[in-house]
Image 1 (cartoon, helix red, strand yellow):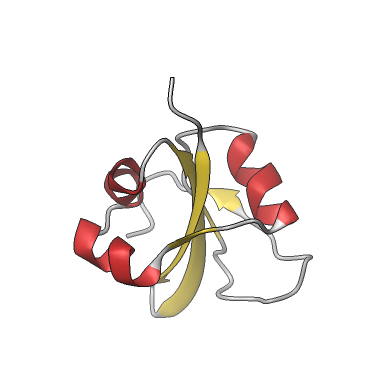
Image 2: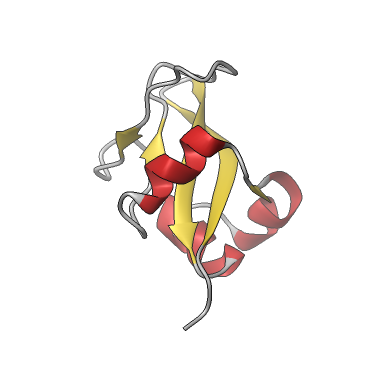
Length: 87
């Protein structure tokens, strides 16, 4: 089985730029889970090594987590699991 990578990308949700992380086997899989076109992910997403992002995403591989309060570059950023109603 292919190794899981944790992908991070910024996406607008309800007018706020929110960070999204997901543990997936490929960027194509991550783009489908997050709901962004693959070409967007190729340009703007990256595999993250941030400890908080990795721990969050690997707690439930395949689940998209996002920051509902917008982008924060602090380690205390709060991620929540995306339920599909956020946009």
